[in-house]
Image 1 (cartoon, rainbow, N blue to C red):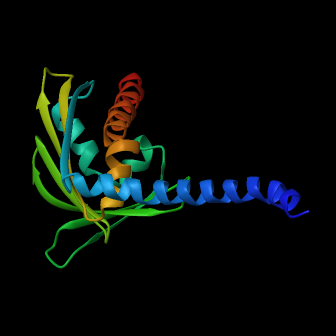
Image 2: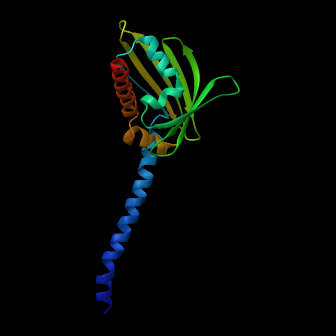
Length: 183
């Protein structure tokens, strides 16, 4: 009788042990890998945008208009911080979250640098605008990210590529430039 009980219970015990081992590996392996990664990294990419340099600069510094070309943004709130820097908060349509940015440097019409930080990370983003001709510009986006927690380092670098976000920004700007050039 006891051998029958063991035969019935043994697969369940093995199953639960495997679940526990898998859970431990899934929880601690990203943490251990993240600990070996440097806390800061930078990515950069460039693209041509069919807007002249001054108009592109104006578009990127007009935070109230971000909802026109950043389709995932519901609205933007603008304020000033204690150092008189412009602060804008983007409210996401899909996730309902918000993201706050601080404008740290502007050089018209060629440079915009802003930063963002939370308890988990800090990042600095640069938009470098170079005129190509009267109607086109080259935009370079460089982002430097500092992640405090090793778990976030793993997921940010391995699973959630910031390069996708930069490419998406280029795509949204090109799409918007087509729309305003056709008007």
